Amino acid sequence: MIVYFLVRMLPQKEVEEMRKAVIVSHLTPEELKERMLASKDREQFQRWQVIFMMNTQKYRAEEVAELVGVSKGTVYQWIHLYNHKRPDALTLEGRGGRTGGLFTWEEEETLLSEISEKAMQGLVVIAHPIREYVERKLGRAVSKDYAYDLLHRHGWRKVSPRPEHPKVNKEEQEEFKKNSLSSWRPPLKASRKKIRGH
Image (tube, rainbow, N blue to C red; front, side):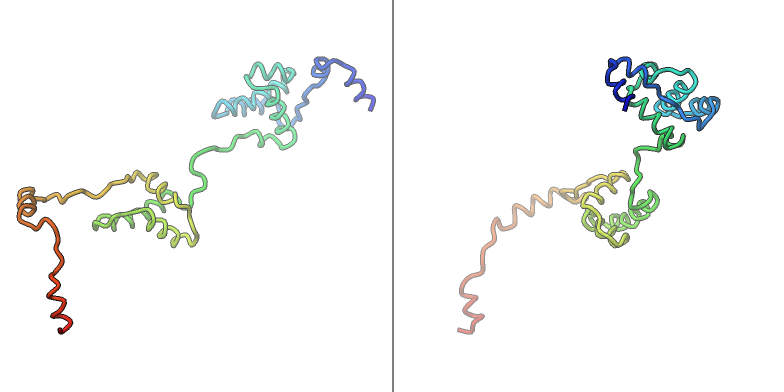
């Protein structure tokens, strides 16, 4: 209670100067330096650099934050991780990428090769049957977008059917248009009476 009273009486700047972050000695300074130098990216290097500097050079958190290029809060957060959750807590996990796929890349390729056989036979491949096929394979429902995402991931693209046959003969088409009836006419009423038997 007395310490609390004294801290309340001191100006904020003096309180911050009194507050010294203590680094628990999980690793020796040499081990810290090895981990810092073995870092694969900038953020991982900064984490180990903060712990190394706070442990060996005895800088204040504000000074380390300014030298490393992070906020003071980040310095305290990394110190807390190191002290309370052991050194491995500072190691960054892989981020991004495709981590939660329903199938592996190879399984998706196998699935698409089965579907491509139908496409080669001239059948139009659309997303709804692909989705149903995937759901049967998995034994559970998938989102509407899954089929589109699957096709996009593997470089499939939307191709609409051709508007005309590749072996079309334009002259024959024009001749047919000239000689055919311009409109359809229903059969005469007389033929209905013959059908009824009157």
